[in-house]
Length: 132
Length: 132
DNA sequence: CCCCTTTCCAGTATTAATTCCTAATAATAC
DNA sequence: GTATTATTAGGAATTAATACTGGAAAGGGG
Image (cartoon, rainbow over all chains, first blue to last red; front, side):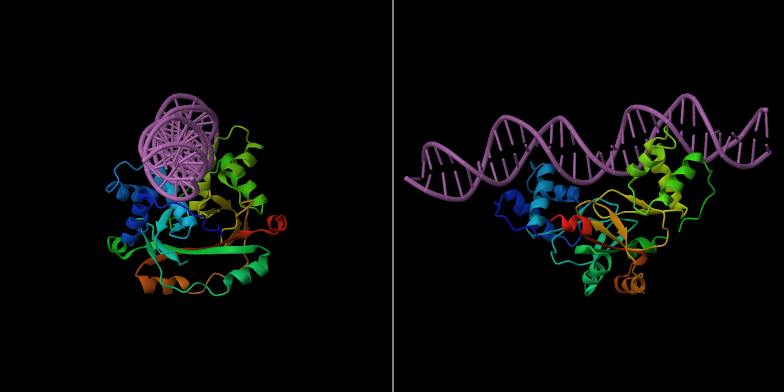
């Protein structure tokens, strides 16, 4: 847990966070960039990356490191699980309680000091499934 | 499930698979490349990538798409879970039964046709933990 | 306000991992 | 063997993410 160092509230950061909160999807850095550019046409992609990183370090958003694909970002900060559609790539939140006590059990069994876990499903979303 | 199309048995493929079976670690493509090059000094990295992909499509090895980091490969083909050390990066197999019926339950709940899931833990391995 | 310090930004270059391309080569079928 | 066709080495291209740089904009004390 990195301590939340104090950081400035800049226009760019406000807009990034605000845009992310407006959507239920889990956009990639590039998608956030395109969203933000509508309001701040001169932002650079580097700024978006840097600030998504900073905001996630301060617990204001969640950086999702999905297996295999590029990172996605989520304004819902509590840890939760995801499904990813292998056809269209979209990611959906799951309403499922975090596995209880699983980290401690695994830690005891393998000797690691477990700091987190990730459970993700993949499959076809309803839209994509119907098209086959 | 892609059908196992027939493919040629080349020296490169034999050596790649053989080297992977010799280790219990989960090497990256680059590490496999270095291992293979000791026996076939002229292999190219592209060949290693292509064949790891083909061999995994044919069920001869497992391609691990770990969150955030580069891919790793595993000669143990049955689905199982992993822990990754956030300090040294190594990945270790977990002896833990696959979560029973979880895919069907999730599929029913969210409408996806679930084709797979991945559960991974992260933390400090015993070696790295001691050093802090 | 003004100055000083610090943090941040845009724009660009760079890195790292992986994939793609092509002529030459080697495995399998005939 | 010879023909057929997938596969290879080598390098170029692509993609996602990060690093660097000079300049701009807070914040804070007077």
